[in-house]
Image 1 (spheres, one colour):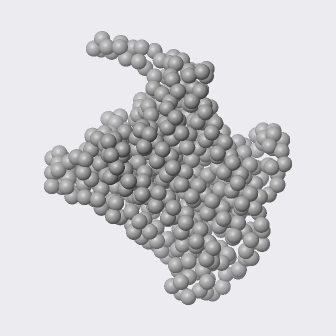
Image 2 (spheres, one colour):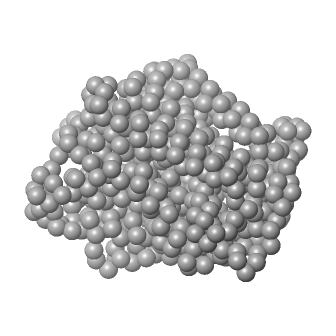
Image 3 (tube, one colour):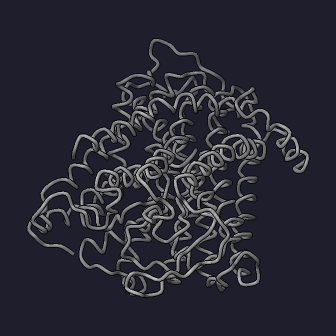
Length: 562
């Protein structure tokens, strides 16, 4: 690494530290209805409320909130699924693309509605402009807004006392979309278009190369979709090469903007939580826990990529990386995108060194809580906070409390369900694919690297991440269907227990802190929380990691590659 690489690493991390707190305050004002930067858009919110009617006004209990989430997402899946099947008859399809197969359409619909944005297809060769915008880009907004809404509902559940309600899903989703995601995405899209990201409705022109060959140049409204894919922790690329494509990410400056956009809002909403529960120290505690895990993973990945590789006889491997961005930018992106629920890539993760690829895997395996998806990372981390408080309570012989609410059997049952269900779906899915002919037929690599390819696909689906290890052909009926099931379990198998916890905590009375209360906003708690996160992640996935990237690392040291 040279001094410019080091500067970029520190600058990227510093931007998170500086920008996250004010962003969190801004989002807090949005959700509690105070005046904020975009309050002048209030008439549009009133129009939405009038259209939705009474359902956007009444407070909901956790069951009503859950049903609203379920209904809204079910309609979204159906709409995106049908829009793809009707693509050949729709306008804004200048290339005349046919409809995708039913299994690919189902996989894509589930993927974008669950904020996973896994893509088993080549965007520029499969989907027309209308489907890209009306189906995929719209869900980029809505799936991110749903994640934020659930996180805000959980914050209300913790903050409220003796209450049966946790807010209104429709109002939360409208506010998150209208005041946060839409204006910030428009601003970023304009800037990205100014850096050279394409934004048009042109047909694909044909160019003649220096070798006199004919090359079709893909076009489309890419900048607008890239802005929300990054800010909403979506990650679905307009082009197959995602952010390694020069039309989607043309320069080092656009690369840095897209990189920072991945974590800005997930970092900011942590401070929104602190504001809502009236404890900014609690927000900082959670933020620093996430930040420490991010920095640790980034440091290990950089060490692995710049270390001497006996298999190729050199250090600083450039295979699978863009020459325009280099190694440090590629490792920064792989760490940021796997720490968030963001599937965008600017390098091929399959070409990372085994340890760096293993860090990307492990980041997702932890439950997408190192900032994680927009909203989902926060409520996923709160699950680990509740578990840590419970374990600490057992150690000191007291009834565990968190921010004045007693943590009892019902909350722990929901926490365990939310943590174990996605993990079980990932391991069962990957295990089955590793032994069944339908799963093995798509592999391009053998040995531990092939296992990592399969494992990464199911981890990415269960963690609602969407990035791919590459090397695995996932566009088969088997993978499209099984990965869709894992995506649903990874999303709603966490959301519904979280809402149940929110409802239970909202109904409880407040217990004021006493001399025996376990403090949850100091350095000791940060260390304890990190320990619980790593132990749970290690116990769950360490055997699979051992058979994949860890074994591959030692084989690489002996000069063997796959």
